[in-house]
Image 1 (spheres, one colour):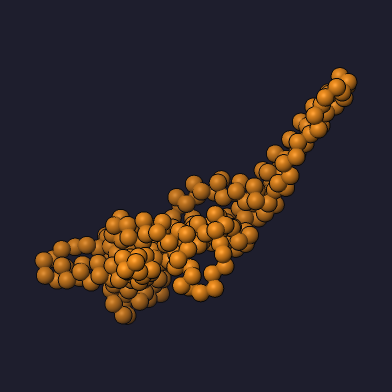
Image 2 (cartoon, rainbow, N blue to C red; image 1 turned 135 degrees about the vertical axis):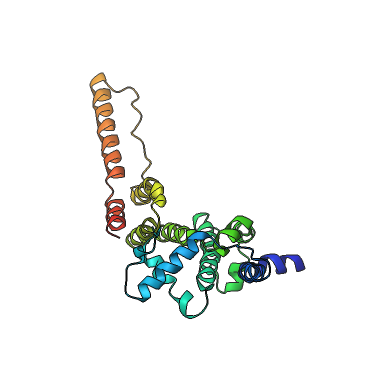
Length: 252
């Protein structure tokens, strides 16, 4: 019971604490032993932010190859502390775990309504998300200053919005994920047809048994079945919700 409280109920507090500890430790190791823990790209986007402060393009910084929005997020590094960006990425990384947990509950419809946050902390998937929150790989990535957690956040947020039938907002959010880095585009077909499946008529009735019908009746039934199948395929491919989702993604 005590272990559950310490490692499960306090999972989000622990996740933030571990990430902050890694950031502080990296600063101590750098000061004492010149041990560099920071991702090289973190220096690049921080330098890009400096150009934006001076009302110049972040692309004036050599090897800057990211969205200007990322440099914009790094501006506090120059006014508060150089680790603000790492702290931001760590918070986003923990929020990814929260989104995963919410999506799992919605998709599996385990959901009694959670009246308090304490009820949510004891949901059926509270241990599953530990695989993400306590994952050394994800902890290492965000605390070294990689922004990949932002892309992950937008992708899973888009999936959550789709589950909530907010397809158009999901298209905008998914568009931001592709804007930050191109590789989330690989999820586009899956999301597009998943929306089509959710939006399609789920009438699974089949045609009546042919039985002792005449040959001409059998032919007519077969033709009608073929036509109905073709219509269903077209509805699946050209579902209007999926099309608007795709358009908003591209526009974003």
